[in-house]
Length: 323
Figure 1 (spheres, one colour):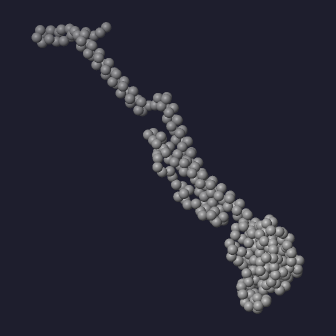
Figure 2 (cartoon, helix red, strand yellow):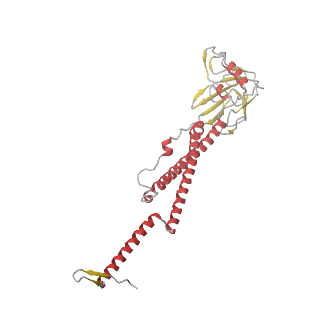
Figure 3 (cartoon, one colour):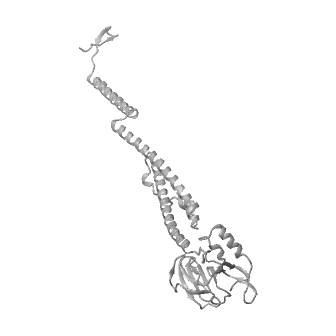
């Protein structure tokens, strides 16, 4: 039962019953509804700010998980970068240095990407910076790997060439110490046996009995096996590649022919005294890029340190050559 309200009328000095008009009632109801709606709206906005819906909670968890994954990715990128840096250092300081190749500059290995914005599609998000930085690092590491891969391909080719060089370069004494009588003369100024005039001797003379085997000092191809060169008599020239040529003169006879491939240690001929020679011996020369050089530096393949020291001492004596 609704309460009855009365209003005191001072003119009539009596209480009158308060009768609410329908218009006023409608006004109050409208104000109440609007106030309630406004309160509800404010409450929803406030609640949404401080409280998450199930969908928002799921999205938040997903975002947190993505941030965690990016953190793990960055950690792995750091490890990859460390491994690549170590490989690059060894590549420049060991591999390329050993094979006489120029080191790859750091700016070439780690240069970024200029020009067009490659990461525009990642802009405009809450974590755009994180995503863009991760993609930049991935691109740079990918380029580093490509550069390093090409470098290793080059090193493999250089290694193959180096192996061929090590096999080809004249590296052993052409006559064994067991059959060698003595080193009659070395590289340098010597007395000519025929004119007695002091002149430059461009090879080394190894005294040995006639018929002593002469060995190829490195892999190569026989370019000459004839007696058509003045003073050398029967001689052999082997082209070892890489600019190296070895010459074996005053032979008794050949054991190879022109254009024949030979290996280091193969018997190519026998000691004699043909041509301009005073006694049976082998005159041995080495040329590099057309210039005759001292053969004493090319016996590391079959001599001990003591044997090399003795050979060096004998070859340095300024005596009379045998040719």
